[in-house]
Image (cartoon, rainbow, N blue to C red; front, side, top):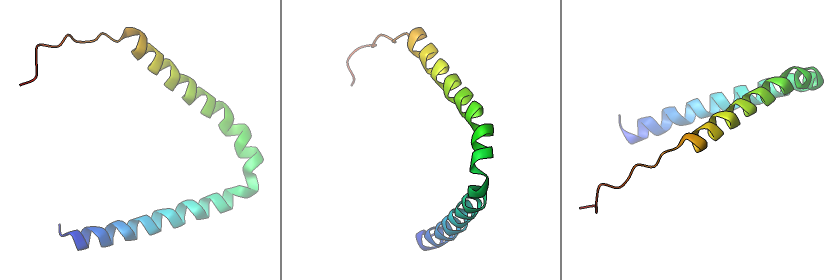
Length: 71
């Protein structure tokens, strides 16, 4: 794909996606209290799960010994 074609389609997609997200955010603004009550536990769960996975990886990490100098 040529660079001009790629840049054009990427720009079009970016504009459409940005407009969609702004529109949805504007429409949901009226219900922010209800959304907050619903999303807060989900967000806390996702962040807790992510932290648990990260800590597991830190605790169980085993470094691989180097096989020698890089050539």
